[in-house]
Length: 515
Image (cartoon, rainbow, N blue to C red):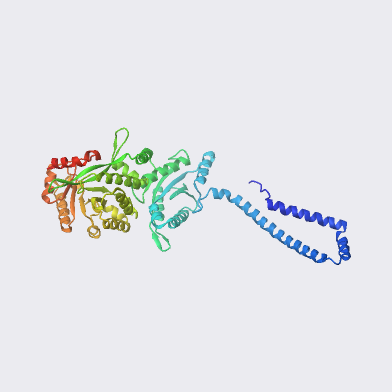
């Protein structure tokens, strides 16, 4: 601890006290008081006695002020001493939850490595909250802080004899000492169960989830630090596979994590450099064989010429928080391309399920349309039923705003999710898309054929256009046309192509080829 140096006010007070004591001693030794009394008696015509009384009063008040000042300075010094005593605690703990932070965790790991005599066995649990970002975005940071405090208290209660750390954001780590025969997978499930209980703040109940990964030390790491990194790797796998999952670390997870990190870094660079562009696949009227629009599909071609499929980079974009930038960039690009098409052709564009939980989505889409100058009725947004179910309240607000502005909405992948009739009756859909998995086998599978017939009949009854995707054979096209399907899409009718191959003067040629 550093030595406290006296402050300037303290020095000044000490100096004045020293001067006062010096003058007092001089006046005592030289009999100043008697000489002063004699001088006043000899000069009675001057009010010297009153002046001396005023000086005495001022001096007394000065002493009182000095005493108060010294008392204040003493308290300040004590506060500084106390602050220095707590400086290590402040540096090593999270101020919000009062849990040990990453710096504390690093010191624990360093101490464990240096002290080879007490090699304790630990189970490291890495915990990441599911849906925390949505709480901050929709309810505000006050709710988010309340959730973090509640989670910290719950973990501390669950592990009263072990160390719980908050590493930042919504990430926590638990170091549990291994005593006895413990089922760590079951302990991970208890963590999920405890965290998943609703948190109530200002009368608002907030639902939480958690992804948990764990690793054992020394089995899953040469030291405690490595075991924690491996538990974090397992947590990432759990988060990727769903909500409220617990995963133990296995060695193969390292390769998957390294690949994910590379893809995310490359994806960030690709978005920054606008390397991901829309390709366009025709939507064909099965009754007239005419192109009525194009669906924009994201295509990422690397510098080496390799195409990375959307099934790989779209989930990474969603998990890394890049999906908003990617979608806005692709939509703006696609709308700009659509301006060169004949005015009767529509642009179909897919929305990520995550985005329907964003209340600002509709405003961003309409702003892009306004900036580019593409009329709202020329764009058709495709959403999946599972996306609507995830956050029904927000999805309704977003979709209603878009529909009221003139944007068309298509229900994508119908038949593979909930296929709930309540969704069809609750939302104003302009189109239903039959998933390609039904089209691929409906000619040979009687049940699949009946499903397609039912969907087409449902669309006719509701006055909703039906699109079948994944048409690759002429027999499929003919059969769907006979059943009364409205629109077809698939390799038979046209493969996805870049914008330069869909110039306005080439659209007529494509139409004639399909006749």
